[in-house]
Image 1 (spheres, each protein chain N blue to C red):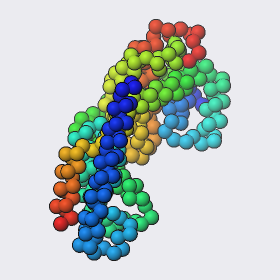
Image 2: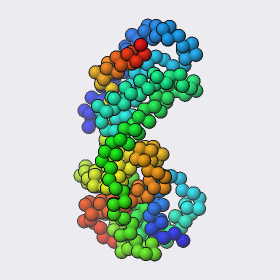
Image 3: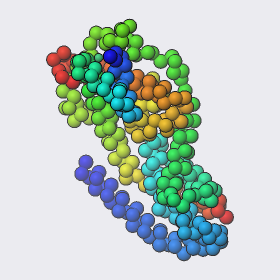
Length: 235
Length: 84
Ligand SMILES: [Zn+2]
């Protein structure tokens, strides 16, 4: 663990110094670029595209990587974003931060990518089992009991628990799994997920996420907590 | 009074949106009286904590990721082509 952190800091220091160097080299070219394009209104607001790459390239790349988990695709998304930014730079509002503006463009590209990826493996949401009907009786009360989880805090200290959790997430029905991952592992907000997965209303998404959490709870009960699932435990 | 089924839904939804005052009161009133829903809500909260830790474990390498030099040069070239 310690060595991983050390390597990380060295890498970070390395690219930071590289960054400083590149930015200095860039300076001459930058003013030349402005003279060529002759964009007086923009001059004070936006720097030139290669400076975007140098100053925000890593942030954009991380943003994409965190959401797609795909390094090669993330490079493409950064490139598409910068080219789109270049083509639409007249529409940049002076009030926005340059990086916020670029991230905003990237966000749309990421959502489009996830949408296409999802369509390639789309399944029928209606065909997924209705877990809630299994758990509740006609009057909406729990059918049987809610099994207790034995010693959940120690579970969070064990690598094996996280492997079980990952397997449970992988075992979710396709759409539920996708929605849950985007929400909890990639930190997208609900609007973004609805757009990416083409879910009509926020309420549909809430239903999907509620079912996903319920089946994850069932899966963890069965594959991790079962041994201690006595009524006496408190959680 | 909400049913357990409705409460199980709110236990999840409060992680995705802000519950109204009315919903919060109904939710906590039910929890006060229903041991199984209390347990379920606590388990969902633990699930969220566990997923948060899983996310941290996965994001650690991402936090240090940098756009590879090759890609950087390729993108710079494309930008120059496009601005020419
Ligand atoms: Zn209840």
